Length: 364
Image (cartoon, rainbow, N blue to C red):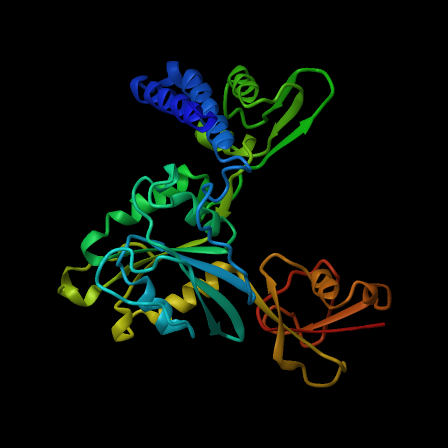
């Protein structure tokens, strides 16, 4: 047996033990250790030699634009149609499964921002275990800035199936990393600092040891409600991404029968132009992009043709560094205009957060 086959066999055994062990408070410790063992095995399986799924034709994508978005879903749900309607791509469209055999890129321009959209081969159940070239597709997803999950009106439940496959592959959608700090030490075994008392400390120590952590200080900086979040904070290889869910071909059913109780679901009939504007807006919002316009002269007009594309949470200092690292030494003042400025030309610190359509002037 190959090393990969041995690891898969171990994974199957651990998954079976997890299924066969009833979960309650008394078994929480054992479940946690089993899940830690499973996470470590999957990390080993997805090691550098297996990234992208091994031999054969890979999906090496040259990223361009200000951000990249991948279309992920069942075969024949309309990914190619959507790509063709919102970008300059020409993706083959057909009414049969696996029409898209490679990765087709296109560029969507919205609000002055260039967003690369990638049409991926359809994901099927079992993709996390490499069914249907799953690992190659997942490797492209990990490298993107956002994922769009797509299904059609006849197979809505598959949205959760696709999300589950990505979860199994270590991709966390619309979530943030747990606030856990691990400081490796030369000695002293494992110390757990958990002011929120999320878990029994002995369980945390056993889970950490199972994951190969021997000497460390583990500081849990938020209240954790389940052991999966704890493991996510300790394991390598987790990817956190914003996601938008799209349900296509809604023109095939009576509109009165469509119930949309989720704000992040876009109802779409791409070939009819339905839902395209909402799709673009949700992608823009989910990416957290911010347009910053620069002023050459304090009293002059900002250059609104070529904005700097920043991300929500970045600061005026980040803007300055984007312009020039050397320039940081030549300026000591930043003035901003726009909706979040208290008044036009407000002087702010370099730690001031950027906001969309902010105008800024740097000087002395």
